[in-house]
Amino acid sequence: MTMPLRCLARTVGAGLVAVAALTTAGHTAEAEAADTLGSAAAGQGRYFGAAVAANHLGEADYAATLDREFTSATPENEMKWDATEPSRGTFTFAAADRVVAHARSRGMDVRGHTLVWHSQLPSWVGTLGAADLRTAMNGHINGLMGHYKGEIHSWDVVNEAFQDGGSGARRSSPFQDRLGDGFIEEAFRTARAADPAAKLCYNDYNTDGVNAKSNAVYAMVKDFRSRGVPIDCVGFQSHFNSASPVPADYRQNLQRFADLGVDVQITELDIEGSGSAQAASYTKVVDACLAVDRCTGITVWGVTDKYSWRSGGTPLLFDGDYRKKPAYDAVLTALGGSGDPGGPGDPGDPAASCTAAYTRTADWSSGYNGQVTITAGDAPISSWTATVTLPSPQSVSSLWNGTPTWTGTVMTVRPSWNGTLAAGASTSFGFTVAKNGSGAAPTVGGCTAS
Ligand code: G2I
Image (cartoon, helix red, strand yellow):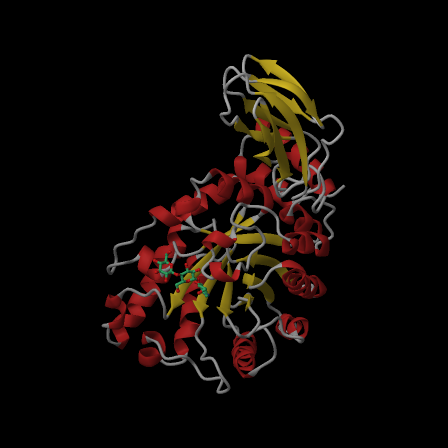
């Protein structure tokens, strides 16, 4: 029996011996079942992470899903330069601290994102001359890495420094334009000194397959490795959609970087789409990572579709109600997990529910017939209960396809033979009413299902 990495991290990180024994026991059971993304990935020696936004941690379902499924967290925006050093030399860590504290207290690793990037850069950075900019860049790296020293598993030291398209050139940015190509090397050297235990990554997008951009990054990493510039990992963001699908040579590309002696990580995975097509694309990504020994983990860029930067494309593993999508089941299966995708009791299943709709199907001077149609919601149900309140002084003379009980004028109806309904399916019960002088309509008080 292998103790999952997460349990080890919790046991060590918590420092609470009495709690640790219980926690370890609980999580060993979880790992045997491998019924979460994190436990299944741990069984493959990988982490499975999510981008996390501090302002959603107070939402119970968000935090519960994060805590249940993921073993690594990447602050989505909270560690970026505009969030952490909005004016020169004044560091603001409150939001990032919230993500780090949440993750660490639950035994998750944290990826640091990101130290040097052309975007989400406060305007003061762009006004500096070369010498000052170099000092500011190193000051920023030291400020962040110093604050989080020992807490960050991997840092995206430099993010997105290469242009898209065929040239393989560096992207224009204050750093590139004033300091030249050497800013990347300098950033990595500063980062190594600031926290020697952290893995130092270069991170980019549209570098997922073999192409001019990934070739340029490859050449840089190869050069760094040959000259001893400290780099430990390359992050492949992996933002996919129909215009930019999972490349056929994804695994091959990951492998060629790994062969340079660096780890590779899938750092911002999301794939627009739905259903089995989206699930199949996710499977390709997981399979590629598992086929590359040095692919150490996968991070999806968010917990739920509703908060994704591409929410319209529903690119993540949980829908807006935190239900597991087919893509979730595919990832869990590809990781060798043995969950119960779609089966009864799956925490991601929609809850049993039903609706009740009333119609008068016949009417005569002294009476009428009523019918209530029961329709199951998004989940199959095994029983239902509907209430019908009769206006006084009406009385029910007969009822069919249901079993009534009475409390005053309120009739509670349960199934006789027709309790089991597939998702979306309907049944009905009917009854004859003696008007006793009142033709008013009864009130149907809703439906509950189990
Ligand atoms: O664009 C997707 C990702 C590409 N790679 C680097 C990642 O850092 C980047 O993440 C996204 C975040 O997911 C977005 O949440 O970076 C965007 C900014 O470049 C983030 O969007 C920003 C909005 O532009 C701001 O208006 C907003 O204030 O998020 C901010 C915080 O919600």
